Length: 91
Image 1 (cartoon, rainbow, N blue to C red):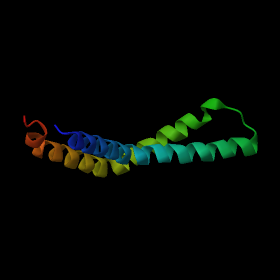
Image 2 (cartoon, rainbow, N blue to C red):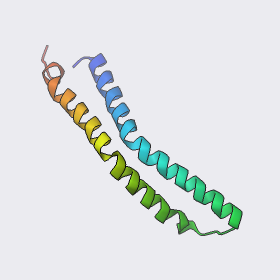
Image 3 (spheres, one colour):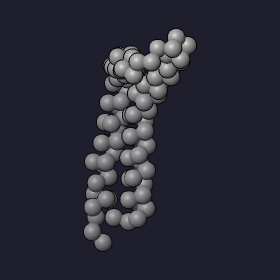
Image 4 (cartoon, rainbow, N blue to C red):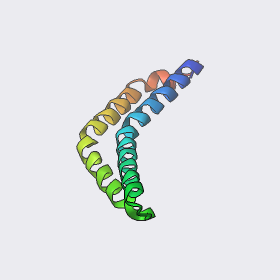
């Protein structure tokens, strides 16, 4: 394996990881921000108040984005298997 191939594989892996985790993390961030603003406005200081809304929204986003996420993982895995001969070639 050449250094360029290792770097490209690492970059592709990080890109796929960011694509898959992005929607879930962004939705949890938005819900946390909204609940925090609500807590600041109403002066409710309950640490566990954000847990249930975040869990529900992340679950909904996961259900809605699951086909797209599976397609991204499938493409990446197929690409890895198609290029495996180039990756493990002995020079």
